[in-house]
Amino acid sequence: MRKKIVAGNWKMNTILQEGISLAQEVRDISGGLQGDVTIIIAPPFIHLTEVKKIIDGSRILLAAQNCSYEDKGAYTGEVSAGMISSAGAGYVIIGHSERRAYFNEDNRMLYKKVCQALDHDLTPIYCCGERLDEREAGTHFGIVKGQISEGVFDLDEENFRKIIIAYEPVWAIGTGVNATPEQAQEMHRFIREVITERYGKGTAEDTTILYGGSCKPSNARSLFSNPDVDGGLIGGASLKADDFAGIINSF
Ligand code: PGA
Image (cartoon, rainbow, N blue to C red; front, side):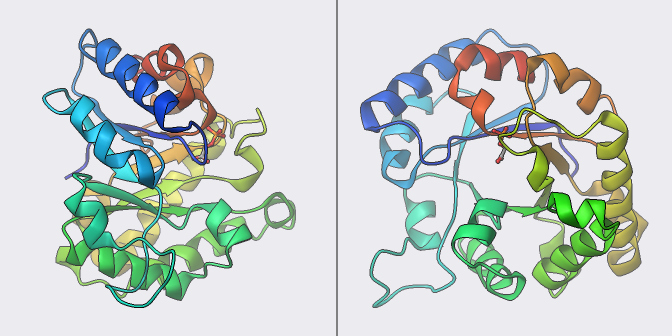
């Protein structure tokens, strides 16, 4: 079902004690927030269990930032979807552009991760988005279509309906240069058309599509007010509880 969501991706920031403090601040602020926005935070793996204790009983939900494409076994250093689920998270970010760029994750590997997540009752937040050179070359629609069709279109409709999409243009991530509301709306509408071709209009309209890339309190309202933008995946601004709350309040 289509939802309004603001998800904070902490990336590789905060040592455990800082993460605990940040989670406490976000929890305390969230108590006073109005509206029906689903609030998710994605701390580093090693914080999940402690953060879960802090947010239990609040409206904040928990995500991991990645998972293995293997189920279990001799894969030193990997973290499985089952482990994440058992730590109390309900969501997992899959295919963030930083993972694609720095850890060579490709669409077919990401499909396996999405399947692992679904097998362990985690909701995948599947990321897509073009680089600046791809946008300048005019190939951005094709790139995003490829990321989505190769990454998640082998799912049957029932499983596809469980996932969340995040459109994050790489050139907007951490740069301070957000996509304009028009650019975001244009791509989100396009993504809904691509989903319509594969699964039909009903499923496309029910899919939650988040925008990510330099989203902050000052631009969130103009981004979220677009008909096809259902919320945000927030990096830098999710590390400050006040900014994160300001974004949540932007619906
Ligand atoms: P940013 O990151 O908000 O810092 O641009 C967004 C993301 O990478 O999810």
